[in-house]
Length: 199
Image (cartoon, rainbow, N blue to C red; front, side, top):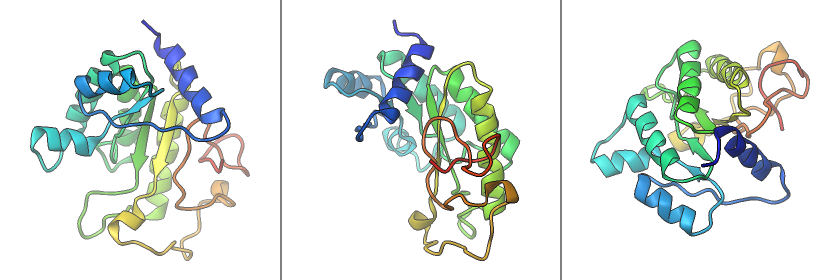
């Protein structure tokens, strides 16, 4: 069986090589095995797929992580977890979801700026940055190179403006705002010791 560290290194290598790769979304062990047999090189869970499979409108973090562990155990492929908003609004609690995702055996995960609040579906920019910063710190503290993806969901929820009036914190100036963050070491071009990436 491939170790989690080896899976993490393989997943990072997929992101660092030239060109793109396709990462499909299994929703259970059976689809994970099928996709692995088809030759895919990595898998990413789908919270929507889990909700549809269970006939629910929404699923919580515990179910997302339980599903992730099932998919991780189904093959030797690297797995990244769709963590939605990491099950919490507060940055520290959101960061805990990154640690919990790694405990399932996954080697990557996402954090998004969709709040789940119908009236204010996208977190304020400063709160979104704080959440990503906390997630980055949690990912960097892990014993594996955990691939963190920060998803900008504004276009999916009717927020088409870029909020140019809302400047980023000093350590993040120069980063392209609202861009989904990529896997790998996450850092600002202008703040090499911390913060959020602009890769």
